[in-house]
Length: 141
Image (cartoon, rainbow, N blue to C red; front, side, top):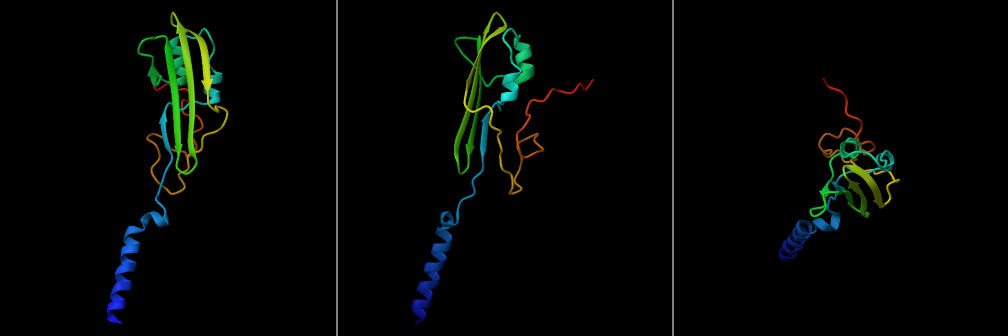
């Protein structure tokens, strides 16, 4: 009887120690790249200068290494329990002027990143949803 109690206790302890994945592993949304919204892309117009584009969109994530006239703004959101969302905007310049805008992904959908567990927010973020990442900079002179 005493041997049976020890065996059951040891088995229960091993199950609890090794069964962490049984209770679920904490996962969080992982955003990567430049946040791209329909509002930001809607402000772009052909003929804008590179500086105007940087003011609206921020610095590009990628500049084509063999063609300095192409900028890529890529955003990935690896949702913890719902797959991956991808957005991409490719801008083409000719002589410092924007000539083409190519869009990929669902830019019109709002991006919600859950922080209901009270975990840390992305650096500089004070709100849960990412609504207006590149608001017009304030004049701090």
